[in-house]
Image 1 (spheres, helix red, strand yellow):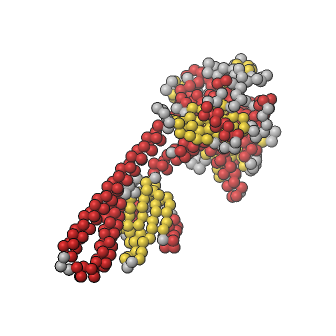
Image 2 (cartoon, one colour; image 1 turned 120 degrees about the vertical axis):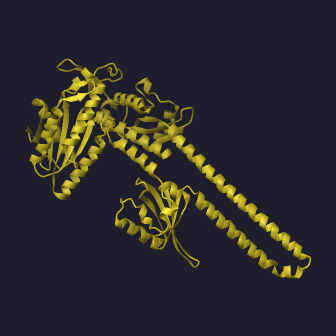
Image 3 (tube, helix red, strand yellow; image 1 turned 120 degrees about the horizontal axis):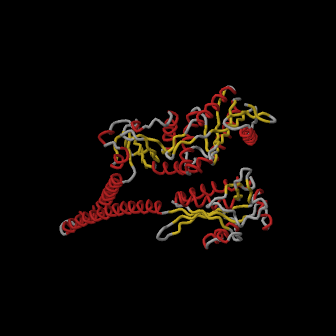
Length: 529
């Protein structure tokens, strides 16, 4: 539970820090002045407030201001609270509480991050990591005495912990019940052992009056036999109780891999009754997700080491795929036939939760498209593969034209609906192997891999322009927009991430300067259709 809270907090912190770094590298960004975004009274900048050529008042949003607005969105959407703070805050509202103060002091002692469960009527997990001064930060914070690499504060993430605590409590109750049941079985077996021993002693005492000599000669061997018998009874009955009541599925197979015994938990987890599987190969559980080499390696490890464990995807009787942690042990000796005992722990829910957290960290929550971080990773992969195989690919940056009037006239909900439909049209306009991502706001990107010629790229770009020029039928009304696309080709327009992105941006700028609703390729000194 603690690890999951740390991973979630770290992912949210990283997303916020990436947004702050982007803002800082651009020296702040301008947004229209609105009721929710007023000029920042704590920002000392000679160009804090500007007016565009068409009379729109803009105000500069610095990294700290951006973090506060992200915090408002996160708290409204998921109940997560973000708070930027410092031991020397400029803004009074950024002053740390007691927990944050202690975390900031620990950062100065070298601690990389702090995560803690705060109990109470509404328990929460709190996570905090330090914010270090980077080169872009010195433009605003140098006058406060900060130096490069110094810790200037941190961002705390407060996440509701009720759901995780409920899961933990449920698991504790289940485990306690199992322990109580095992203890009761052990006590019953001990009581049986004591009763049987007492009967043997009573019989021996009765015979003592007439057969003292015989009893004296055989007492030693009889006591030893009784002890061995009692131990075997206890061990066998205890093993049977554990086998029948274990929460994990247990499978016993022979040396040929045929199932000879399963416990009740096996039927609960897989849906197969014991009568369905006895005498059948254990391969009936195969999901088809693992290669022949995977199972060859498993059996090789079993024969070499006598044991094997790892994650395995299986299939239930109803066809549902699930993942288990599988542990197999080879048992042989004592004149008994070779047996393999396997325990299966269902970890499907844990894997689903891990995948959900991973998806949230690398995908846009509105459109479901990859976000800027995942897009950057895939761009680096595309460059590596293109280098290795000598292939060409295209990087496309797309901006929506006339998107702001949709928000102003039909509302932000309509704007969200338009972005969702835009994502759908982009996906159907490219090939299955291509990547489409939302980079922020009304900015999108696409990586067209393994293209054979410029003509193929032109075909896709033209299709996107045409698709987005079609009217959007929204709940709030009909909206019409267009898009501008800038294209950079690998390796013609660059062989690294920065060069390709810069040149695609330049081509996009040229499209907008020329009137929008078109695409252009980058060329040295400008861009071409």
